[in-house]
Length: 428
Image (cartoon, rainbow, N blue to C red; front, side):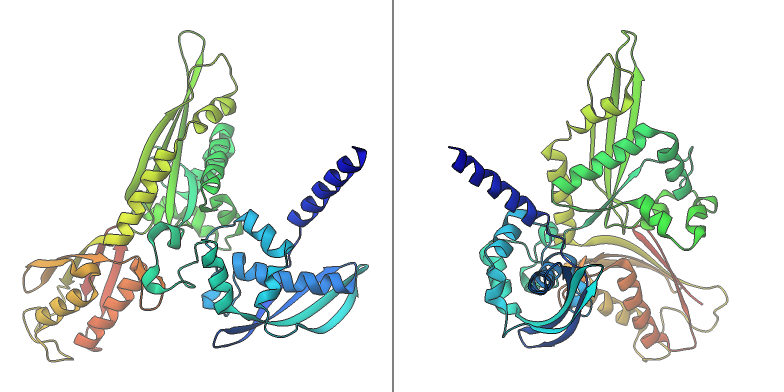
């Protein structure tokens, strides 16, 4: 009995040691030829052999979860961490099946009592991708077949959770920071909601960390120049912005209740994706964080399903964007009802053709126009299947600027301003 117990405890210790493996992030790209990629990885351990093994594992871990600069735009192969799969892949040494040749140790050195080893290895990407697909793991868009990209599961949007600010508090990063610094229950709610998103497989970013790491302090003063909530959302570091509003109320019975309101919007257009309210219920307590926790625990899967469905619809249909094309008052002698100065094409016909070719699903409209004004709506894709990467409104604006330059030449300069689902273009 004691023997079996000892073996059981030893197994727990070994599993814990493995799960706590500290992989190195010192992995660099060397070359890519066909299905083979060559990487160099550096890791440290007490023994030389262990350091070499850890370097090899670190290379695979970087491919899976952090990405390698120079390979697929630095995107990781997987959209989410699957701890059970990672355990089997490394513990059963499956990674050895995808090595091409024997890893070469370039050099070793002693660092603080440990041996640091740098290893060069070549990996069969085709076989490794097949292994991941067999285990039904979602590949990142940059690694999957462009035609097989699936909405939220593949794009895996990054979530940034922030406190709700209003016109009264001011739409600024400074207002957000002051809220979480002065109201512990707000900071607690923001952190806990972010944890819930992580549990549901989303990547999250800490907006406070982004502010603290910012080199330009002007980002903290952006709200002093505008009260536009949409512009604030667009400057946050994520694909989807989730605002958290938590209100604690003391009732006549001496009990207290916390109301948690969540609103998720898509960053590029500030289009609403999901909205839900949750109540903690009534409790005899003055601990506001505990009340907030009760409300957060009631966040149902319905909210995440609503968010996922809305984002999937946006990926499938594209972002609907309104555009206005205006001619500056200073321009005399040319207008939109004439041939384009550079190409010689009738400008509105060329514009219609460009919209037709660039609208997602061919959905666009430019029926309202005069000789100095054109109003348009166009569906803009979230994903560039041709290049197998995300497509932002900035990318769209850049492509439209290239079209205008080809039509107008250097004589006329387009000024493009984006604000949420509206793009203003003035030809000067």
